[in-house]
Structure formats: structure tokens, C-alpha cells
Amino acid sequence: MKTRIFFTLLVVLGMTAWGQNDKGFEISKNLEIFANVYKNLHTNYVDDVDPGKTMKVAIDAMLASMDPYTNYFAESDMEDVKMQVLGQYGGIGSLIHQEGDKIYIAEPYEGLPADKAGLKIGDRILAVNGESTEGKNNADVSSAMRGQAGTNVTLRLEREGKEFDVTITRAEIRLPNVSYSGMVDGNVGYIRLDEFTQDAAKNVREAFKRLKRDHPDMKGIILDLRGNGGGLMGEAVDIVNIWVKQNELVVETKGKIASKNLKSRTRMTPEDLNIPVAVLINGQSASASEIVSGSLQDLDRAVIIGERSYGKGLVQNILPMPYNSQMKVTVSKYFIPSGRCIQAIDYKHRDANGRATKVPDSLKTAFKTRNGRTVYDGFGIEPDVEVEHETTSLLSMALYNRFHFFNYAIKFHREHETIPSPHDFVITDEIYQDFIDYLSDKTYDYTTYTENIINDLRKVAEEENYMDNLKQQIDQLEKTYKEAKKEDLMRNRSEVSELLQDAILVHYYYRKGCIESSLRSDPDVKKAVEILSNSEEYRRLLSR
Image (spheres, one colour):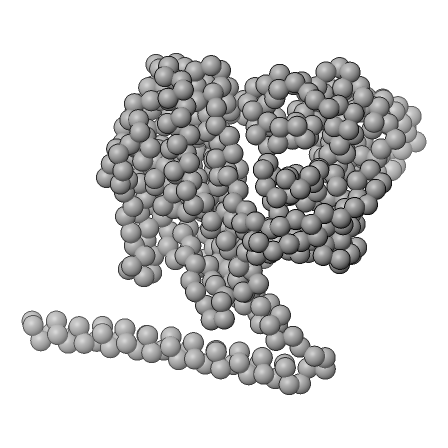
């Protein structure tokens, strides 16, 4: 018996070694083939070949067959890596945008070099360090404006028809990950976290402590993770720890390399184990956002409100590479306390067109939260309370894409030195009518679904030879529709006013003002306040 087991073991070990040797041979063979292709291309191709550019294209194409999170960064891309991991970069601290072939300052960040130098929303960038922006795109100009902290950059700007130069000393720009915290509806706290960059947990904890100190009667706390694409896993674990006891399992990672298989537990004393918590998520809440919302859901420590999250259950590490380059590689999947992995896309299997497929419903597995509630893997975090949102109208999208909100707000700011506080400012009848007048000679074409149906009806009637009988009715229908379409600005006034309000507020109160104002009518926030203010409903949602 022992002899048989020993023989079997030798066969298995032999097969394993053979498999490893076979894979090693395949790797060596293909590397040799690749090197020869590259050499022959460089030697024989009719035009000069840029070695760095050609190799970058080859690497990017290879990594594209994996998943969208596995990337190679050349030395010149290090600022992008710092931005992703640390939320910081060397620059002047301003968003820019492209309108046609022109580049504009879109939003100087409060208190950063661009803001201190007096740059304003709507300033057109004509040149960076003497090099014209003509023919350049947004990325080109952004790259030229970034650079090592302490160095200068000179911008040639145009404002209200006048050109002038501004020299700005670049700084290490670190964007605040907590973009706003405050109270809503009197006794419910609110914290908005935009990214899980370095110190995110520290900043959320401090914001929560400050709200508790200043508002001792606070009934609940809202953590807003909508639009938050994630970041550092450790920050996610420490944020959960604010409301969960020490040594609680938050997330486990499992990958090919044993050292990447880790269990991350809460490690600090929590701030509050009893206060009701609501977490807001949507379709752009991903990765670390899903670790926080998913683990708090699995531990029955928070009510999750909004829309289903993105479904990213993969973990990346950044690995050093030769010549100061780096590589971000997916090294594992993560699993939250119930044992589920919420990865929604299967990048290993692809359809006939090469597209990665979603995990089918038939492969989704049910898991249980601590209180016995049923949750599922494979498709993101499903909220405990789903809130329906109105679809953005085609009119609003057309106005936004044509920069009419942006440009009207510049005009409004020139004409109004001050406005009421973000909490009190509203788009009055007078302001809205002025906006309509502003649009009177502007283009913002959009084709509605009704318009498409009328056009399709006309085509079908012609194809089936009914046009002689129906032309008069179709023409009348089209005329009636066009008259009704003229009223779209009034029909969609509420939505258009909200977008216009944001565009104006950022001129006076920066991004914080826009957030504070939006909380007044935010359906997710309203639902969260309703639930957190009703202890019986809160307990019911978290019970089995």
C-alpha cells in the first residue's frame, strides 16, 4: 500500500514538474519570437520606428487582454500613478475643459495655486510656457501644466477679450478626499468621500468626531460613496472600523501567490458602535467603496441606499519595473465578511466579439449577513433600499454638452458680485427667463425618441405605399410635436434649474457650495434622513 502511494506521489510530482517546465518553455519560446519580431520590425520596416512608442503599444495591447485594471506606466506617467494612489500631483490645482478647439479653465480648486493666482472659470488658455495650445487637446495641455512642485509655469490667458500672462509656482496638489461634511435636516450628519486615497479614513473619522462634538443630539450619519471609484484597501478597512468593533474581519483577498492571501481586520477602537449609519452608493461606486458598503451590509451595521454598485471585486498591486517604470497588476479577488465576491465581470471568458461577459444569474450564489439576511455575489452591492432616479432629459444633456450652463454662469458671475448662501440660493423666475433669453440665439439641437418615431413612421409609410393616405396626418403630427418641443425648457425647468444652479454656485462657493446646495433636493439623502430618523424602520431593515 505504501509503495503504491509513493509511486502515485512520484507520478503527480513528475507531472507537476513537467507542466511547469512545459509552461516555462512556452514563455521562453514566445519571448524569443517577440524579440525577433521587434528586431525585424526595427531593422526592415520602411519608415523609422520609435522604439519606446512601439513597445508601449505592444505592452498595452497585451495587458488589454487581461482586465482594464492591469496597466503599465512609463516613467513619464508617474504623476498619474501618484494621482491614483495618493490623490496628489505636481501642478497648479485646476480643472480644465475643451470646447471645440479651445481650452478653458473649468474650475480652480479653492486655496490652491491657480486660485491664489487669480485664475477664473472661463479663462481661455492660449499658451503654456510660450507654447501655443492651438491644435492641442485637453490631455496635452493638462500634461504641460503639471510638473515638479516648486517649478514655475507661465500661462497666456484670455479673459473678456484681453490677453495677459500669469506665472504660477507649481505645488504638490493633494485633493481633499472628504469634499464636504455637515448636517442635513437638522440632526443627521453627512460625510461625502470622493476617493480612498491616503488618509481617507483619518479624514472621515475626524469629520465624524467633529459632527458628534458640535451636534451632540445627532441621530444618524450618512456616508456618501456615490461616484467613488475606490482606491486603497487599507483605508476602506479603517473607515469600516469607525462604526465596527476592533478585530472584526472586513475583507479577505485570495490570489495565485500565497503572500497575497490576506485577512484584513479592524485594528483600532471604534468611534461609535450604536449610531445608525446609512451608506449611499450608485453604479459608479466601486472597489473600496464596495468593501465599505458591502462589509457594513454583511455585518448589519448600516443601511445601504441608492443604486446597485459597479461590481469590482479585484485587487491590484503596483510593482516596480526597470527604468523607473511601474506596473499595476490584478493579483487577487476580495471577499467580504459573508464570504461573497461581488465581481460582476468575468474577464477570463469573452464572447465572440472579444468582450468580457457578466457573471450569469445561474452562477450567482446566496450568502447570509450576520443577522441572516440574504445577499448575493457576482453583481456588485445591491442596496437595502433602492431609490429610483429620473433619467436626465435629452434637453439637459444637449445644454450641458454645448457648454451653455458653463458659459451662462460666466456671464451671470460678471453681472452679479454676490449671491445668497448655497443653502438659500435658488434659480428664480427672473434668472430662468434670463437663461432662456441667453439661449435664444444658441444652438443645442437634440433628437427625442418621439421625433425618431415620427421619422420612422414617415419612412415606413413611404415603403408600404401608405404615404398618399397618411401624409396630411403625419405632417400635422410633426407640426404639433415641434410646437410642444418648444416648451421643453419649461417642461424640464426643475432639472435644468438644478444644473444651472451648480454651474453658478461654483463661481462663488467652489465645489463645497454645489454639494451643500444639492443636498436640499437629493432623493437618496432624503430617503436616508427618513430612515435614520425612524429607529423602528432602521432596525427592521437590518433584521432577518
